[in-house]
Length: 259
Image 1 (cartoon, rainbow, N blue to C red):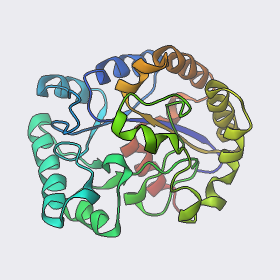
Image 2: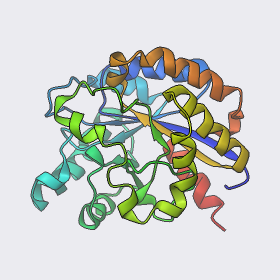
Image 3: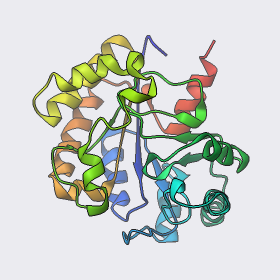
Image 4: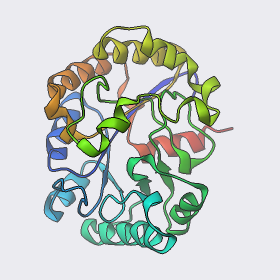
C-alpha cells in the first residue's frame, strides 16, 4: 500500500444532506461510506428509510448506533444494545448485511471494540487523524483529516469546545511516529484548502491512504460545499479511478496486500 495512493471518504450521522454529498462524490467519480444512526438524540434529522435504501444502491452504508449514542456515557448493556440493534435495524431497512461501524464521537474502548466484533461487524472506523497507513487492527480504522476548518466555530454547540481542540487525544496515544509527517504538512500551510491539497500531494508522492471524513450538515456553516467541490476536483486529477474506494473496499485491499 505504501507505493500507491488510495482515496476514501466517509460521512457520519446520516443527515438528509448526505444525499447532496452523494451527488457531489458521484460528480467527481469518488466513493464514500455513510455511517448512519436510525435517529439522533442530539436533535439533528436523519435520512428516512427510503432515502437510505436509495443511497445504499450506490454507496456503502455503515452503522452509527441506534440514535448516535456516545457509548462511553452509557452502561455496558445499553452500549451493547446500541451496537447490536443499530446494525440489525439498519440491515432490515437496507435489505442486506452491514459490515462497517463508526464509533459516535470517536468514543472507543477495548470493551466497546469487543462489542462491535461480537455484533458481527468486519471493521470499525475511528476519528484518529493524520494517518496515511492502515493499522493492523480493522476495528481501529484511522483517518487522515476531517473536512472541517476547526478554527471555525462548530454549529453543534455541545461539540464546539471539543472540536476547537484540534489535536485532542493526538500525541497521547502513541501515534506520533505514524502521523508526524502529515501533521507537519498540515500545519505548514495557512489555509484549510491549501492544507488539504498539500496533504494529498504528500500521500500521492509517498503512497498510502488519504481518508477524508466529515458531516454533511456541517458544510452549510463554512462555505464547505464549494470548498469540497474544489478539493474533489483537485483530487480527481491525482487519484486514478482504481484507487478510489469506500471504507469496506479499503479494508479488503489492505487485507489482500498485508503480506
